[in-house]
Amino acid sequence: MVQKQPQQYQLKGQNQLIFKCEMPENIERIELTENLLKVLNT
Image (cartoon, rainbow, N blue to C red; front, side, top):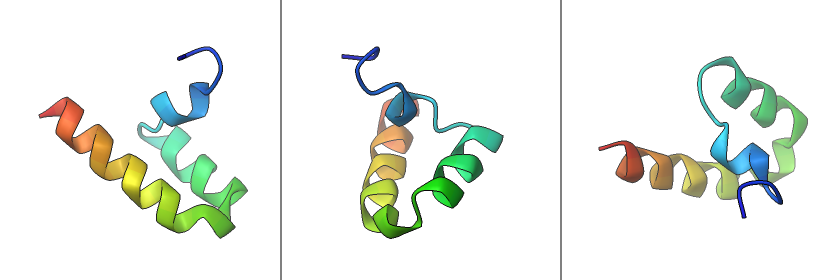
């Protein structure tokens, strides 16, 4: 699962900014992923 979609599990620091720049049309999905990461990191 992590290997199939690594970008969803590497949204940290600069990687997060790079992912946003590469996928500007998926801002809503990225925000949902950020919220998920916040919950997992809590």
